[in-house]
Image 1 (cartoon, rainbow, N blue to C red):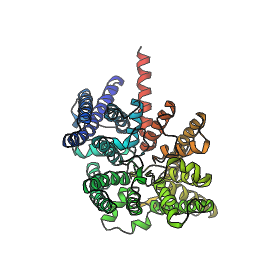
Image 2: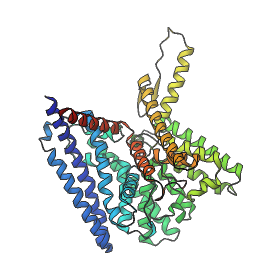
Image 3: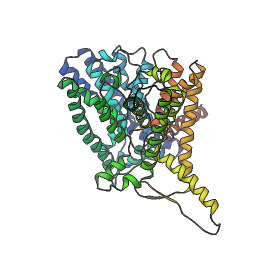
Image 4: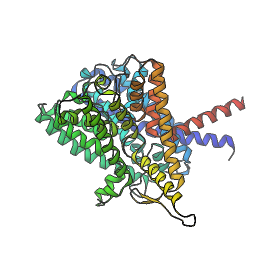
Length: 508
């Protein structure tokens, strides 16, 4: 095949599947459209009708550009990665339209900021006057974070033909790699089955709890659905601007802790336990690492807050300190205190612990962000293995293994790839910290906010606001996007784009 034909084929493959994902996600706007009709919210209804039509036109247009016999399409790894990363950019723009049309956003950039925050399950926002937001638009925010937690590509693959080539490559491009079934389509279905079953359970429990603390039945149900979606997706959005402070309920906080921890666990672990393999809970290197880092950071946060006498008793330290730490470590971003309380009350040590927890994050192939416990465990185990190798005889060959859903050989390539991703996260985090300092924010505040967006957490120390400089908003959007897709898919898109531009320049 000639170079020109290869380029055309690349564009067709990428365009076809990107269009399919755009249409699949755009159809989710039917939910807020129906909500607007039922609740007679006519202005949001018009906003969503405009948005869904624009999205469907672009989606079908992309499919037409890539119109070919899809049974003859061979999707390469680069195609799968590019489709995943490109679809996220397009969907960020398209899903921001109803935000912008609502009049609750200062600019379209701010609307894109909130959408990517939802898709990446980060949870920081620039939306104004949330307490008076229409139910349909507020629901749309939570739909985005729920779909983003599982993945837009994961959603689209469920409805693709089982004969579709390259589904796994798109699946990996969205930062997932666990296989729950023999084929990718059934794996994505299982992911959604797991999520929807938890949704039913979690919403019911929070609904009952909400009525117990004084919410009216229908309002309690609405809040329960929104809060569960944010907890399970480790997204951190809330129907009210005060977030978890609005409820003033210890029981509500306990229930959310259970589901945000469950949301931060690997989908493969959920499936293994459901199949009766309970030993996986304590044998899995990822769970061992995740548990160890949670216990250590919780211990340090308690010591730091107790030393400063920030809270009067153990219950208060748990509700504010440990809850905040768990929210940070699972990259959920629920807040039951005001943003500036971190800076004004917690002290430098506690803030530093929170930064570390946010960067560590949850588990691989979950809804959580951050380094991921699996990578941390592999790097630590790799270091231990190297020390052991240096202490044994050169004539003795020893193979090191680790357990993650099954036995794996701990080779140097696995350790290096895990370390590389961690290094890339650190570079992204340091870049955000430096940019925050450049714009005059204190270093620790800049580091806190940068860790939050890089790890897709959503906690804020007060920097995120409509008044922050636009370049910082753009950097945070990039950080959320890169952190969620874990770099490689985005690098593939950048490389493909630069390559295409170079070829055009050469032809001219």
